[in-house]
Length: 281
Image (tube, rainbow, N blue to C red):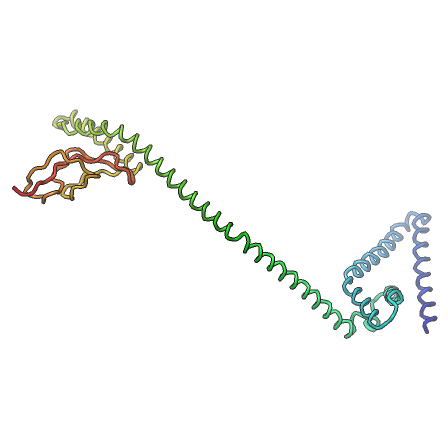
């Protein structure tokens, strides 16, 4: 039976070779009208071989398992691989892979494939555990230093942000300190305008519009006026021009604002000049 099988296989292989030679000859010497059909046959043969090679290349794992099965059963590996190759070639010539001859569908092969995959999973798990152990060891050595550097970096960022904000507020306060006297003179001039005639009313309206624009600019810059009456006297916010009895406000409270003060954020640009109540007479 083995001799007959090999003889049949050799006959089939010889037919394939002769067919290939015939295609090459016909491609070279066939009439022009036949050549498209010849080329179609050659392309079909080449496409079938490419698909077959692709299928074989996707079975590398199965091939390794077959070799392992052969070694466990005591058979020669080269002999088993050769038998497998002959079986596949015979199936190709018949046009299909028979399930009866396909070793990869056997229960023994599938069980062995499961064992191989389990071993590969165990190997991967072992490598993952080793990597995690190295990571934990390296973190134990360098982790505290990394955390310290992160903390120092955050502190530097906070200090830099605070310094930048403080510098901006200081520069803004210095500029406003030069502008406030001009605003004071503007307010004094506005207070002396008597809007009796149409021309005076027009001037007063223009002054009021300009003063409103200045107030909006101050609001955008974060300027807050210190002009509240009746609050306790605060040396940081107020400058006492004098103390005098006041029938309304209690002692040590602001009775009158002589000149408004201003502050920008937490910076006192100019304290308010006030009269402090010394109590009721």
